[in-house]
Image 1 (cartoon, helix red, strand yellow):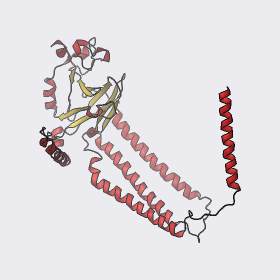
Image 2: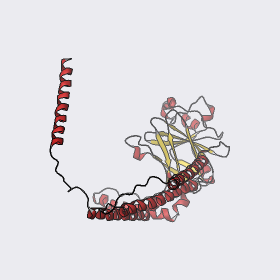
Image 3: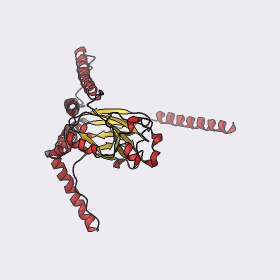
Image 4: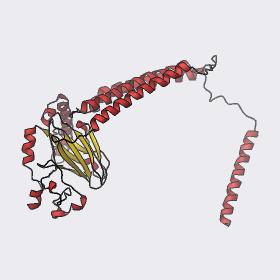
Length: 356
């Protein structure tokens, strides 16, 4: 108690000294210092600097789109990709239009109404018409964006189970992906992480052997999709939250431990067709040029050169899920229905895996 009382007294004494110091400063005769007050020349210079900064913003924006515009969005390879891109580019266009106009006006009026000794500030009480305009226009603009976004979201996220769709489970764990295909019955068997150690670790995604629907399921480490057929993804995670991200298909969905999340899309461009597109050919050429330059140093050190890059669709993890997050990738192959059927028929189903 004594220590607390001493601390309180010290705090009060400190505050008292500070207050006395302020009173002493205020009691001294003031010396007028106008060295920090901007004059007309300063205001004119600052206004011109604002115009220079405005030009810098516009030049940087135009240069960025010219230089790196092709990497903002890769070529869309899903049926809903065009709707997604339209929403994004429409939003971009509107934002940049508004930004261009407002920034130009802000910088113009900052210069036009810069401080001058001969000018006095004009008191402008209100203007109902002007206030209505700057309230109504943003309101309508935002409403259009919201409704367009909701419509696109509903179109993409509405998943209807049907017999024609391919059902695939994406199973995430640190730091890899596995795909599980429904067998001939078209139904994925039940699964749980408690069954992962069954059959000497052969049960890679924890299929429940008490559910007969799981015996014809096929588990793979490469994702094959038939072009032109809807794919319904059921997503699970073994450990932490992962995020299944397939940029070319405009698809992303979190994989959450203890629950199943869903996403669906229809691939419309095969891997071979995508490799023939001029944008992809140019991208591959750029990457391989960088790899060739980096390989020179490796060869000089007696190491193997880097392999040439070949384009493939990829499934990535878009959550920072641990130390090897960057390496959590799965190759996606989009092929013709005939090629897909040939591939899936060569895979072993769950019953064959556990009996071998």
